[in-house]
Image: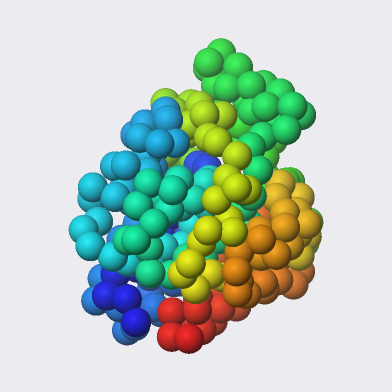
Length: 232
């Protein structure tokens, strides 16, 4: 079992995304690290910074943008990743439609309307039944406020800079878990199915009645999946 677990949050997320996992996985590893992935506007620089921050080998889990960073870390230092978990993410580069949507959100932020970004994203982030649940929406808005306008702009530019990682998937040699919320609209289940089929021996799990943020929407179920992945 690895000594270190690295948890990578998604766009406009910070360590609060992993609150339940931080409390309930710490008995399995010596330390858990949640790096800041808002400081660079290039996905390769973010991956390099995380690799410099965390010495040695480690288990690596990334959700959404965190998954993009995780795949880039694996590209840069494959021998340092003992286990890999990819949650609600994609190995593909952005489609033209996704690039247009990101560019539109960047324009909003550049015009000083950053506070309008999260309400626009929220219906795509969580299951419709959770849109009025403050236990879910409250942390989302709080995390976005902490990341802030400048961090959001750097993150979106980094996401736009990422390479298509599908060619990397068949070369992944570590135990790999792929997780997806069944009702994820941003990175739908078909993208997780594609990744799991391409990674040798990967395990695919769905979190039912869940959107794009299972670590927050269904923390107990997500933690259970990660515990099995860490101890298998």
